[in-house]
Image 1 (cartoon, chains in turn orange, red):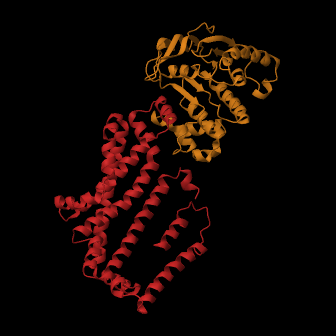
Image 2: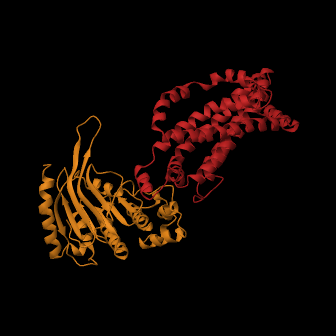
Image 3: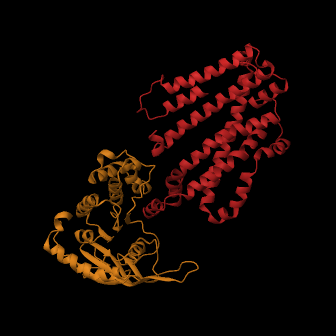
Length: 263
Length: 274
């Protein structure tokens, strides 16, 4: 759906997902979803709760298989868990028994990568936590934990980043800081990112393309290119720009009807 | 005993709190113990209680000195500690290993769960006579008696710990390419460590319990034997001497364990913030 000359990094074609809970009728969670994520871009899915946004991420990581359709990364069908994706969600997923730097190091450690301590330190510096490398999880604030998660995600140099509301559990000020930090780190790596969020500001601020999902079963309702120049203004400033407000209004118009179904 | 547990509390902080040995709490503890010993000694000296049944601090001290100089105490302590430690190490290793294996096999976990509950709720001391029948009065019977107590504690604790691993952490580790082996050693085991240590603390206490009970029932060596043989010859001072020694051994065990625990679980908020 997203115009792109080359093969898209991630491609979903007519994907459907049916959940079959034991002892209850099957649920159609996602239906006929086709979606392209071009290499080096950030595509964000927004949609009402339960519309299968997170499920889409699980398809790409290989944690889940589609009931219908095709999921491809680099033109190859996804089968089984992929180890070249970075995954972040609202909970930090830090191992409490490891220090900040050891958490960042984990992925490098199980791959047996040399100089991993230095690399992990460097990533902690990128997220502004160089003074906290020997701290344990309980000694860090929620925002710091999520910074560790950002460092951990980038440290293994994944091909694709899957972000499932990664800043959703943060207070609004910390969230703004982390969005800015994430984009800054992303600018230097230009990874392919598929992002899921409820926060329209976040979606517009980060993305090249915003995809609006319908209410369950989740389908693609609209695909909205975000034609704002990069590097972007900080989120708080960007929010006052007229182009931003036009895009916001456009996305909200599509999303409103889907959210309203629950009223 | 009371004095030393005070030392333990001040000593195992992270060194951040100022350590003052003359804190009021400490003084009160010393005072209580001294008062207790004085009342005991006084009551005996004044003839208020019968020294034959109750002994006296002076007689106990005398008996302890006799046992130390004759070398008997060292032999008995060495035997009891040796048996308890063997039982503790063997049962803990097997218990933790079994717990981790069951955690990986939901089928066998479901099959064995009620059986483990029944075995674990059986008063294991009731097995002691049978164990002595099978294994004789040597070291083996003591180790096996303690094993029946410790093994299940460690198994159950390890299993609960291993089942409580954070799903987010597992997902992230798997996506990063962790093998089953990595998951076991780098995720499940460290994550279950607090549960395992809760089991180890209990297990250490039970190792002494199992060994002492078996020694009391049938043996010719060890602290349990010392206590039992003193009692059977109406040597109450000997019984108290054995009990005091046992308390010291138990205290050393638990101190050593909390040192290890503080080191391995230093990432736990509860342990660092005391």
